[in-house]
Image 1 (cartoon, helix red, strand yellow):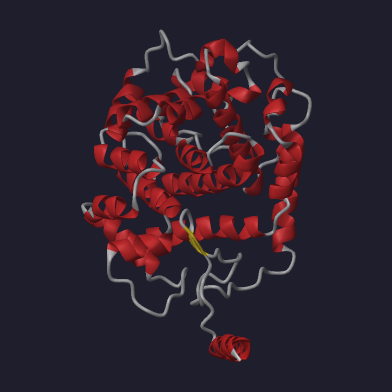
Image 2 (tube, rainbow, N blue to C red):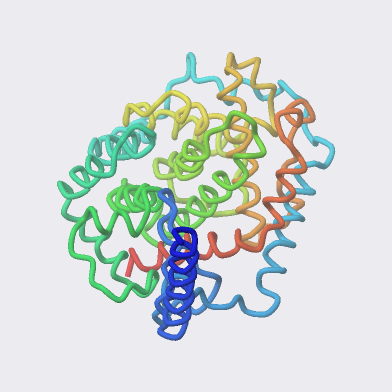
Length: 375
């Protein structure tokens, strides 16, 4: 009789589960998916103005996802065209040794990198060993950042029914990856150097860097041995050097290192390398910022770069170019990668990632995060 008891008990449990699932579907209380890096399940493109129930993302507008994925495909095809420059001819542009930053740029670097709080937070958030409670303490110590995290966790972007009242709860909702974006957003808001980019220009930079970060994280599996979290942070930081350059035509697409060097005496990669040094960030992040344009210009081994540095720089450089293609940049303006770097890339994995419609939702979430936090 004991086996009959277990059978009846199993049937009763199964019936109960069916009832619960049916009730939750009728009540619309589907539990959201969650990822420690990005927070709850990503929303789809469009419809950012109305509340959204987590786990029930709005539909993509007809043709929108396809158009964006086509742009990514065009950008990727351009990166795989035959190289248009000779490897090694511009090595001096990427070598930091023996180079002195022009005085105005050096002063701007000191001002931007002087925000030790942002640098410390970015470093801690980039470490896989940092626990949520420790991040919550760091965020709570910064009233502006804490307010922004709580505002976004309670915004229609996540559509949660219960109010989020603590920083730790907000971090669990928003995700550590998005908190890194918010830390960088605060840095951008503070970085008003004399003659530097205006606030609207810095906002446009942030949108681009947020997209680059998402793309770098998503394509990381195509680079065996590359940590997706490190790729995300490097993508978020890659253009930080532009904050230190005179406003001028920096926002023009795309602004190549030789042209910047001729105009300012330095390009934004080397200026960003100096900023990262002021933040005391891990060397691999600083090198990625310095070298993210190098795959189109030089053989990085000539710059004494290690394999891990080269792998990350190529991934960030590809993500940067793909983000530009999303923004409507003419693919012909993008520079192809040198053939010597292509062995680093698992091409089938890369193609699969860039054809995934879910990528559109992640990119739209990144853009929406910018809008909500700056509102």
